[in-house]
Length: 474
Image (tube, rainbow, N blue to C red):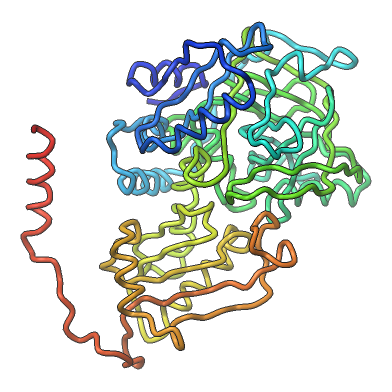
């Protein structure tokens, strides 16, 4: 089932027992973030959380942890909530092959119900803002989807970007936005500033459940996230035209903020508790001037907690990082079987692959580091054989412990790019990257004593299914 807005998805979650309404009055800080933080510690079936009694707010509707479990992630893709993680990744990969699906333009978007412009703009009147971690430098919009266009090709739909970036509220009509240099919006801003122009943007909050998934996907520069959303939804993505900027935005958003990134204006933003499980410090970041806010009546404010994994952020960026890397690697190395990039947005990646010849696995690892996503994120790669499941960590640890000769199978490449948020980088944005080849050597590489491996008995898969069935009916 394809959901056109956040509200229909929340209804479905409630019907499936995956939405928990908190009946008590809670404090905006620390209760909201602490509850979402706790949801990431109670297992893979954690529900979304709904708060509507928040001290200090007279009319707040806040949802957290909407994507914060594999059950909720499955439901977002229209799958049964019990779908195992690996099957979700495989289905994600299958739907990728349906790309592109042309979006459907609609009128009468629900966020057109209310609007404020000019001197009447005050974000604090529209949104119930709160801090997520004690050390955050301010209030953040951390689950927004930001739309921008390439100034050199404003009519090219594929070069219109939909991305997620951290955004700090620095005034009633001002935001500070962090454009990671490897991301599309950073290229758009660079081109605009070279022209001496502002960059128009639309920032959308409270979107249908597929929008946050595609907004964090490492897609090619000229690939449309809306066309990918249609493939993942199994139905065209509904979009509408933002009235001030003319940008294409999700039809079902709760809030649409339109404005401009002011050319060559920077202001200190941060610190912020990041997806790496560490705070990143304050940096000078571009400033967004807000010119219009459109919003649904009784808007729902969606936010997510991120910090020490696992949190909702990790469920969001797990499969949508695995699959693009898998597809990009397979285009050149069809021997690649599976990619597990679940860990810290792909800073660590585990790849299973067959080999053509000795040294082949290391070549796959180096290519992973030079994909569009790998340039900024992939800093450690573990290569395993095609019969090792990269999603089964005991198998991966067995391969690494039994097949790695550190002197020859560990390759360290110095002074490569990584996101500045990576806490181990030094200076920020520069790191050494590592390849661990935990595959079995093949000729002409004849090192080691791997000639007589044990294998699972042929009857093992059938017995595994039989045991699962017996346990399910106990």
